[in-house]
Structure formats: structure tokens, C-alpha cells
Length: 373
Image 1 (cartoon, rainbow, N blue to C red):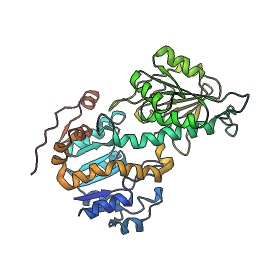
Image 2: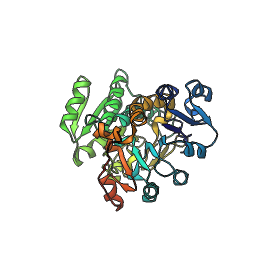
Image 3: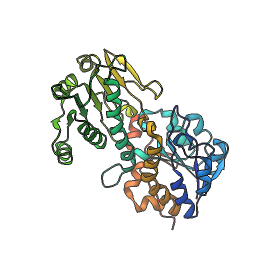
Image 4: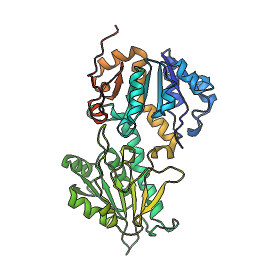
């Protein structure tokens, strides 16, 4: 199969969809990989690294699209990029359709393009590709909060995360006990701060306590406990995730107003719309704003802050799916792994994700794929 890796065009997106090691594997299985020149430079992979791995360097995005049967990206395509695609191609990426535009989905449908969303691919009731990025986001959230709680940021309260003898540590509240929340809580515990994790799922809270040896406080999430937690927090980390849907504003503006001046919100749900009512997307070069005296960090592509680690992580998690399609074709790949099909959002001119179809009033059809053997 011919596989294309374009250079990411989203603002300050430094990740690349496949590291050279992933390309090497694909080439050794007999596949051809076309990569746009400088696509890996944000992660410090050179064209020479990809050439050594067996890739062919091309010099425009258009050429990547024209020569590839399967296109692997990190972030969703811009609408003008969708216009460059050929009919019946496969595009695998973090499409984030739930917070995108209906017109983008319709363009994919018009061209009968198969779109596969990394964030929806399941395995054993987990989201393996998304989890690779969630691990990074959870750890980074604590580093970011630590930075903006300090006095070197003009609105920071000047708090040391772990405190000292006679001085209390920071109070960190994490909303969500999934992969993001677990990694955030682990990082907080490692820094000696007080951490409270809220989640509606008691089983998740018990798992978190088992993993972290009960060095945390867990609370069942409801409007009352969330309001109390937000008011108490020096650092609040929003780690709410809803599969395939926009995240509701669980933390209201009224709750934000109750927070201490100079406290910090890191809304890691912002790529799904944000779980805090006062959140709005920011960028890596201009990552924070202050609302009601509270510092907000709301960067959607936060793993791009550690782009090399993130690119390796994405490669490790996604390669088996790309390789399965390349080796056996899309039909056989899906038939051999039904959970994989949950990541397919458009196919053969139709929307194959019911939640997405209902949200955007699109024609929905169940995915019907037959073996090509």
C-alpha cells in the first residue's frame, strides 16, 4: 500500500504521525511511504532519518495526497486540504469531528473517503491511541500548573507545589479519573502536593486508590462536590472525556468566580469543547488568559509541547492499525477487529458513526464491509 505522511499545518503542531521507526516497519513489510519534506522537523526527525528508514521524500502536500492510498496525520485536515484529496482514500487522524464543522464531514462523504478517528478506536473497552496522548497530557498538566502558580508569572499566587515544613502544599483538584486523571494524580503525588480526584464512576476511583496506594483523596462527582472542590483548588485540572461527543460544561462560570484569585485551571478537555464554562482554546505561544482572576490554560494540542515523545507514543499506539490496513486491506482489518470499526466515521459516502450523524443531522448507515479475500 502507498502511505502518505503530510507535514502538519495546524498552528504550532510539532508532532508527526509516524516516527522513522514506524516507517521502517512499514517499508520492511513491502509498503511505500511518501513523506512531505520537513514533516518531522518539529519532532527533530530529519529527512535523512526518513530516507534511511526507506521513505520517499516529496516536496508538496499535494503530491503526498495524490500518491497515497492511506494518509496518516496527527490533527484533523483543514477544509482546503480535504479539497485536495482523491476519492476513496483513507485518512486516519485525530479528526475530533464532534467539535468540528459539518461542512468538513460532508466533504469527506462527497468524496467517499474513509475517515478513521484515532480517538474512537477501541480495544478491550479502552481507547489505546488516545491514551498514548492522554498519558502525556496528564503529566504536563501538573508541570504547567506548577509554572503558573509560581511568582514568576505576574498573576501567580507564588505557591510551591509540595510546600515545606510548616507550610501547606498546594491543593490540586482533578476532575476525571480516567487515563488523564490517573497520570495527573500520579504526578501530583510525586511532587508532594495534596490531590483530590473527582469522578462519577466509583470503580474508577477505587482503581485510582489501588494504583496510587491511597495517597490521594477520592470523591464521587456531583454538582455539590465539584463546586466545593473547585473553590478549594490552587490548581484545577479538567480531565473529563466523553467518547465521540462534545464535553459539557461541568464547571460553571459561577464556580470559577468562587475560586481564589491567582488559582490555575488547566482544561485538558478543551479539544472536546472544554469542561469549564469560561474556557476557550489557546495556543502554545499564547497559552493562558485570566478570567475572574483565575489563570486559564486551554491548549488543545498540549502533547505537542513534547513533540518527540508524543510522536513516538503515537507511532507505538497507531502502527498496528496502519499496518493491519496496509497488509490486509481495510475490509479485512475491520472484520478481524470489530472494535477497530468504531473509529470509522465516514465510509463510501455515508456517516457510519451514529452519535456524529445525530449531532450534525447527517444520513447514518451502519458500517457494512465485506472480506476482500
